[in-house]
Image (cartoon, rainbow, N blue to C red):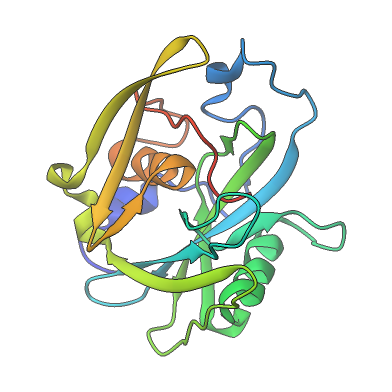
Amino acid sequence: MSEGLEPLWARLHALDAAPAGPAWNHAEFADDGQPTALRRAAVLVGLRRLPQPRLILTVRTATLQAHAGQVAFPGGRVDPDDVDVVATAMREADEEVGLASRWVEPLGYLDRFETLSGYLITPVVAWVDPEASCIPQPAEVAEVFEVPLSFLRDPANLKQLSVSYRGRRRELVEFHYQGYRIWGATAAILHRWLMSGSPGQPIGFQQHQDQHV
């Protein structure tokens, strides 16, 4: 694995120990009327296996009914035929950007994340072969772009906001990279991983609108 990333790997849940229980941000929805039966989903946090890893992200097609034009990880809801959330993340990445599983090496899980729309997301971190092509499927994805992991780890590139939502103040985070706005669930998941300690350790920033699923 790439040098200097050991603290990030230490924050992963092992592949044979998928996270369970409430999402790390579950308390944020205690008074929001969140449905008790959350729908399970998974996203692929795919990193190009390079000396300087790059994170693969998508821009959702502008004609979609939900979250059109937003930046997101490849991912979606768990299907009944998926053997686990790794299978979900891999299937969705293949469907959305043509990333075949042979190019992907899963590494572990990040803490689960809950969205306002009632999804419980498990992020799956994985290496992606440098030679793998990502071709957006226009029905869902308008484009694919990559962000250096070093950019996302630099606190100078983190924007912290405070907004009023449903009668309470909420702290938000987002990143801006070469014209792309990375916000919502995507930014919150990344911030949780890149800025926190071990799995399960809380941090002080949250999202106010779900992102991809």
